[in-house]
Length: 308
Image 1 (cartoon, one colour):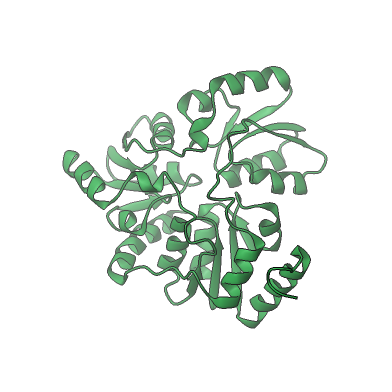
Image 2: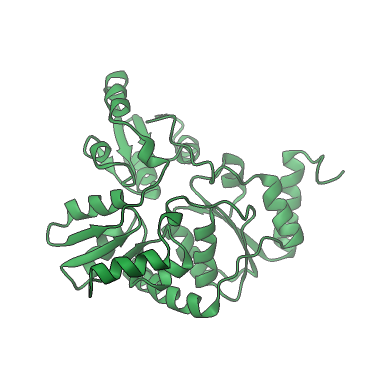
């Protein structure tokens, strides 16, 4: 048997053995493919994965997600070996801002604190005052002692926060999630007609006109929690399709539909069981963050975790 001829079940057995031998933990985002969610030690949104990374005692952390998530894990757990099984699994929204652009944005808005969405590079986090995730963005922005904040890089999440907190002026960078931004109002109107009994749950990374038409707005974990605890039986999910696996698995008597076929993040779908296996076997695709950048970015992430 070679690594190229193993069945999925054999691959899982090898992963489990390597995980025990190397004292490794596998953290997977809610958008990962089902077979990876099923073998992960922790499955969650960016906030959950950050919290778990901050407290793990594993020697090796395998982050099944995208690059900025693995960087965040390394920032919070510098003494652990952090592996990203597919090194080029990136985030187009995170790439829409860099340090130079952020510094210019700050120069144009002097003395205004920067709230940085966790979907960003370590260097951008290091240049910011505090981080947030979609789960805690409202709480974080509300905690900032200023009537103005710069919000980077997601204009849709920034717009949502701005409308929720009239006492604050949220000045947003014009970045966006290419996956959530693809959802069209015609799709949400059509699904209302097709499933009038359904509750429509959407992520705040969707455009404002989509968010306005939804019944519930929340992060991936909040969407999962709402649908699980609700008395409703039918739901339309307006975030990346990966969350459907956990929803259907944990709620077999409920029906779930995807709001748009465009809700697929190809970067999140790059990682396979074989990638996890090879990362553990060879301890390859390690994430490193320059220490000076790490320490400054750590301050932004710590401030977030203290509020969460």
